[in-house]
Length: 322
Image (cartoon, rainbow, N blue to C red; front, side, top):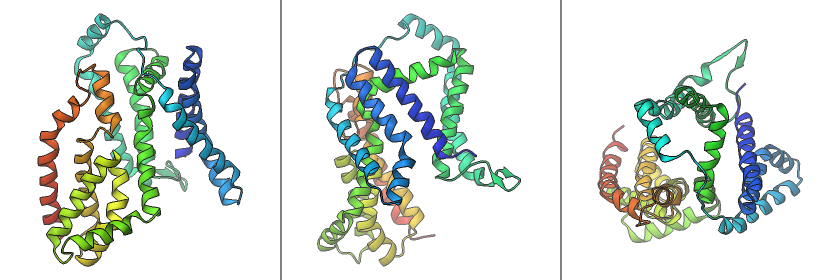
């Protein structure tokens, strides 16, 4: 069966390779950083099993590793890594043309197919896809298959997929972990009662009997919290626990699926507006060597604001219609 354990193992192996390459190049902070991340991905089940058995030591060691990552991150410097000459890259791009988009488009396509039909695939009482989020399993499988497709399209050696992946990883640096860390931060905020504090604050400011006021508070709250924390996944549990669930779903009867989907999309408008989403907004500016580090954000503002207004209108219309 294909489960998350297999793909976490593959990811840990890739991160160890990145650490080894950095060690050979005497980039010791990078090497230690990726080796620690590899250890965290590779030992997750061990930590969970030990915690369930009442042994706190593995979880404490994992916590110490996370603190070490925070200490190592400021020492990671973005440096130019060797790549093919520009003339060779231009020639390759002209030769391959739009075929280059094929492997990238396979990722969402295969992920959607696995989510829709994956749980039905099996034989002899066994399922092809094992335990774990079917969406994450589908995304992981799609990424691996897309890598093989890219090798086939470009005609490169398989080792180039790992080497170029490592180059991109080191170009992004610690920012590559931001989505994971910020999503975890949202869970921490939700568990610590921030959602209840938000609900109390909002209830004292807006007329909670008004659907429109609650929709606006929820949507704008998603945008503002996303701007602050850099990720809509971090904002979602806080705003849904504070406004979405008690005020819109329970009091006004909003459809949870529609509200959640449009709420997340509204939060993404905040992602377009914040330097806190460094891997989306600051890293591309660095990769493109733009003079203005906020140039990507400036280009996205005309999209983010109208999309936010459209989402608020759709939320008000659809969440109470179906």
